Length: 307
Image (cartoon, rainbow, N blue to C red; front, side):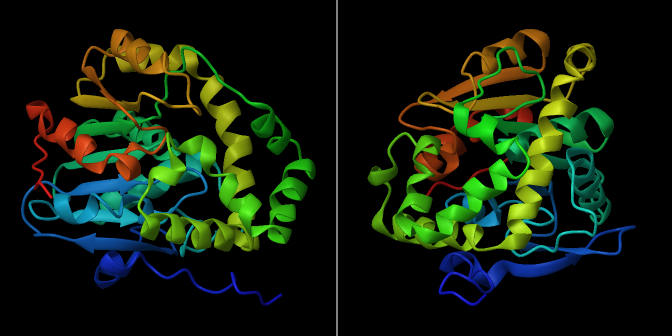
């Protein structure tokens, strides 16, 4: 069905020159990604959250790319990346990021992830500690001290019910936009260009059958996968020496705020930075504060240019 919100997603204008297709090492697929910055030095991979795409990094990408080779992919099934036959699960996503690291010639990388992307980066660091030099987790992590599950999430976990709730937003573009509100401390406080971009982008997601399939496939595998491994994660994270910065928005509504300091107790290599006036996506609401927190942690070895 053709509609004003169907068709290929256009990049955030400043990111358009960096758009590429990256073949994945050892896999018969490729990822859409933004790639920029010098090829020398520590590469930085940016991994977006569930139902999002690489444009979420629009306000930090170029400032990181002054000093680092920065790669920001659309995960499989999201944004402009294809969905593999048979769907995609949390373990699949981890393998994809590992394969992406495998395409790089650098011996080590830094991983920065948000929400689902933070969980993926955390898992990759456990599996490839020799390749991950630094880890930045924005409002997401493997260790869950307190689970926050709202009614909307519970309904989305139900087969058919979740798909119906998702698809019905096609009838009301404003309702689709309003669905973003819990992820921000102040959605209306964003610049007008951001609000216009997000309005179109969330409605493009709603009209994408591919992204709907990817969203529910990952959502329904993620909870089981993470919660069934909590004891194992606690044991593994206690031994993880990778310098880790946990960044959390002070007005976070999606993930329980207790999880950030709880992780620091379990994982000695983790430190916490709280971002005021920010919710679940602080890199969109308070990008400079996020970059300052990263630059202020010398353990990470990530250089940041100020705007």
